[in-house]
Amino acid sequence: MGETTSVGDLPAYRAVPEGEGPWPGLVLVHELFGLDDEMRRHADRLAGMGHLVLAPDLVSRGNRALCLLRTMTALRRGRGRTFDDIDAARADLASDPRCTGSIGVIGFCMGGGFALLLAARPGWDVVVANYGVVPDAEELVGSCPVVASYGGRDLYLRGAARRLETTLTAQGVANDVREYPAAGHAFLNASHTAPWWALPMSRLVMRAGPEPASAQHAWGRIEAFLATHLRA
Image (cartoon, rainbow, N blue to C red; front, top):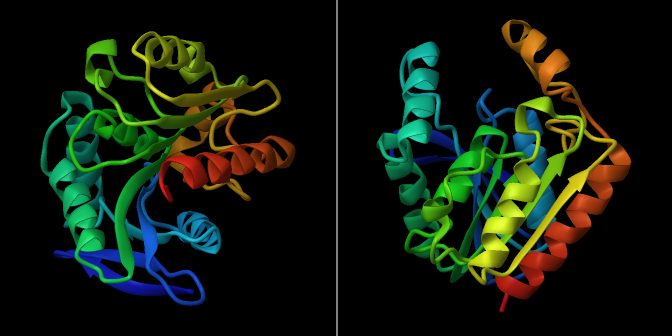
């Protein structure tokens, strides 16, 4: 189902549904730690739902620490090369004859923040944001439909789900935002993925890790939302 590919000079992973297309496309924006096996599994799962998925490794250009710094700086400023890389992945999908031309973006952790910043920008039909930092309300004006999931035990993003839902609803944006009380950060993952240097923040503040019941429900919401707002 999955294949190694590239987006420009970045390595990437493409997950292709079984059968004959064309299919709607999804750009997957990974967590802070890069394009790992956990993100590839998410891509495969989305392909199993009938989406052509492209996931570039946004922190693979040169020194990894510097890449992380540049990527997080772009997220904070709302502009930079990382946005260009994500748009290049969108263009790649748009030019793929296996894609219907309907394209969304799904992000996890850091990627969820990027996804929300892209919601009101041209070229995107739907946004899936999983435990992403919520931008200022003005950044969401004119947003495409958004489905978002957060963990209630995640102290880093305390109140994020409520702020996002309130903002989107006030602006008349179709949305499905949910906070899961039993979950922390990264609860959609099947394993703990944080490296040693991120463990204190991950465990004590974000309370990150798998929460299967919440994850199953969230994936069901994501699939239903995409079926309504992307396949259409």
